[in-house]
Length: 319
Ligand SMILES: Cc1cc2nc3c(=O)[nH]c(=O)nc-3n(C[C@H](O)[C@H](O)[C@H](O)COP(=O)(O)O)c2cc1C
Image (cartoon, rainbow, N blue to C red; front, side):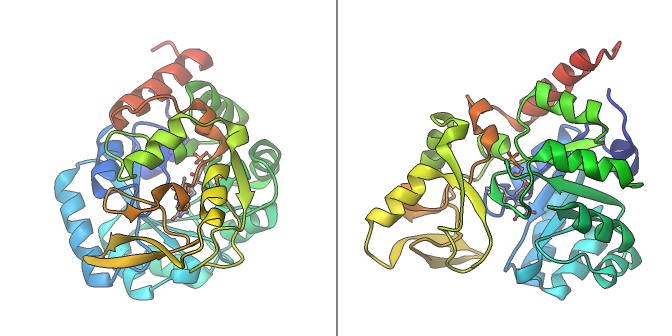
């Protein structure tokens, strides 16, 4: 198996981190990736601390693998950070200035702390803030996109200066792209879009179907789905923007969140999961350019095994 500074630090056997994807990366998917040897990540924005505590308790019973919790800074609840740091191996942040106080809090409670960044300056700030590893995100990525540079140029800049392990994110969905970032010097790949189409994903079937039918050119970086989270560019399927703009109603469906049924406003950040009804095709169908390489629904373990075995072969591992 490929061993890197990331696999050793985090205690996993595969150099793969599942991207946190609220409602899509369900506990089932997080556990499946963790069981397969990767780092499973749970995204929990707007989840009350008591609910998060229960989810993490169930997750630790469900898997013997390693998992972490991701927080989006504009929606941060400090009580949830404390719950996560006590119960998960990794606490991670995205979409805000790296904050030494948050990093220290995570460390005090026993977690490793990471930050997903979109620029060299942010990577340097994350390392200075005390992060144990850094996730570098390129603009190819699906979901919310932090920076303005595509992965390889940014990764090269960060790898030249970083002393902590660096994880590459954005556009990685094949053994070839995993091998490429490892060869470049990254210690792991963070993968989102490919896992949206995993068998254990919580994504709505129509969302998965749209991914399977799409190519990289069918995605676009936009601010169209800004209701509930303005001024935050994101990569989605272009078809979703056209479908949402063709509707006139303010609410395009409903979905379950933390045990309640809530409306889905038109052009809001909410991605459709299996509990969602309404105009699913007009909701935020997040997708990276990696969608070009998403061609079938497979169990998460099969995806992890395919990527790792293929990367080993390409990188010349003897076995
Ligand atoms: C459906 C979806 C939801 C996402 N939600 C989050 C999130 O809550 N927090 C986060 O740090 N990143 C989130 N991301 C971005 C990922 O962390 C990662 O950067 C991206 O998926 C990598 O690109 P890829 O989709 O081509 O693999 C999301 C991505 C997708 C596809």
